[in-house]
Image 1 (cartoon, helix red, strand yellow):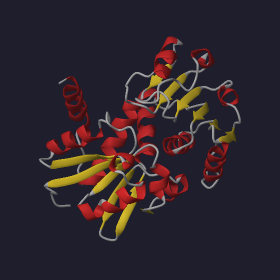
Image 2 (cartoon, helix red, strand yellow):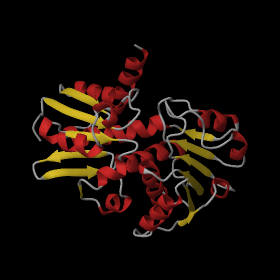
Image 3 (cartoon, rainbow, N blue to C red):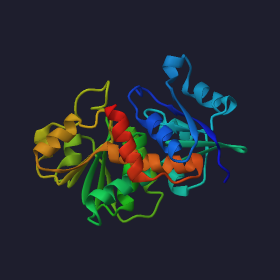
Image 4 (cartoon, rainbow, N blue to C red):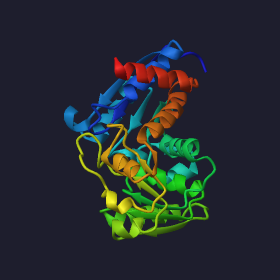
Length: 282
């Protein structure tokens, strides 16, 4: 593709004031001499619905959007999805505005697989508990079956969401056993991996989805949150001697994939990590 010169991008979500996505894409743009405008679009701050904000973006010249909590499932209903697996997932975190309409992708799914492989290599995930089955939880569950998890146990305070995710997982071929648990204690009992797919622990949502005492016996944890980088959930897991995969790794890997979709160019990962670290300390 030709060099775009300038890209207008945005992020739709709630509680995104501290998101590093604008910085990531601006720095990736600098690698290729592309000027990037990246706007935070918070529907209630703008006094509009998600639909209102989303529908206005292509008219305002946006090339694409990132979508975050709590709009990933809603966005999936507004775009064309080319990948049958992402269609079954029912959640998108990346949207491109093409001449024939909006197209949706899910780089959380691939981003988690990449982050998992870097941390744990070819080790299978084992028995896993996914706490929270919204947009990111859905991506995590689909990634876990792709990674060959023996069991994927789903827990959500809204049990109907977990049941819907289990039904959607049944639409694809995989070898994992999938269970919906009524209590979080059932999901984590004897689990190898504990995954937080809720916003608990994020800036504005203080706390942890699990007390430290419930982590005993697990081997590894993943927290989808990266603002802050060190959540109470991860601190407790480290205290228990568990292997930790933090949300920043998902952020980096999904961001690299997003940038390629937005621009057509592959960012240099090591340079981007260094630039982000320097910019964060400035």
